[in-house]
Image (cartoon, rainbow, N blue to C red; front, side):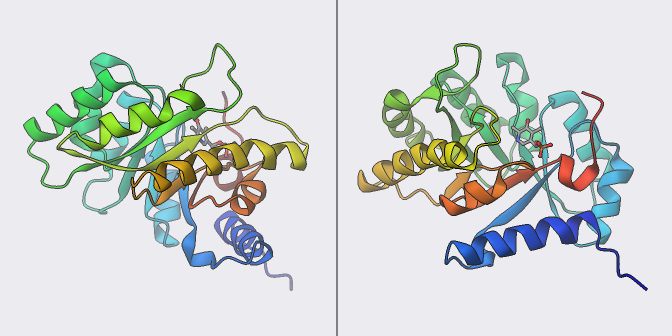
Amino acid sequence: MDIVKTTLQVVQSRIHVAAQKAGREPSEISLLAVSKRQPADAVRGLVMQGQFAYGENYVQEGVAKIQALAGLNLDWHFIGPIQRNKTTQIATHFNWVHSVDRLIIAQRLSEQRLSAERLTPLNVCLQVNVDDEATKSGVALNEVAALALAVRDLPNLRLRGLMAIPRATEDAQQQRAQFALVRQCFEHLNSMGLQLDTLSMGMSADLEAAIAEGATIVRVGTALFGKRDN
Ligand SMILES: *Cc1c(COP(=O)(O)O)cnc(C)c1O
């Protein structure tokens, strides 16, 4: 009889193989399961298999799931575009935010983390725009350093690193080249004394390239939960 692997096992083994190829320890890379547009029961199914970190893109949907699954002690990351009027909800309910790309948003998150009386700082990554597509969110590479220095000084945030969603391409070389830009930016910030430890990059289709370029968090939806409606 064939032993059928779960999608979680398949993704974990992709991470493992990619890490080994890159000469890295698989334990340096954590898997963020992107549960957007998935019901709370789908999350429960993965929790039973030992997956505890989840990423959400939409505030209302995310908060509803966080409340439905409270008690399971999950680690919730906000990874979607941030509207100003949604920062309170994010600062109150999430442990991480990967998509900070302007100072006003970071300032609001810091103030609201305090008002929410959360005892730990909110972990923050700056989203960088590596391909300068006008429509996409993210801070331009040449503006990342200034933003990072300003965010570092906010009291209730902990600046952890960078996040990127490069333009989708099937060309593995091109995927790596885009992730390399993010890694170089990360190294530059650390050479300025910033002590960042997180590179959030790589999704279902390109996690191998991201791991080859130093990703420490890969954000995977489709490969775990199947295709979404949108
Ligand atoms: C949807 C999404 C993902 C997951 O994408 P898949 O291709 O389904 O793995 C990762 N990161 C962000 C920011 C997303 O919006």
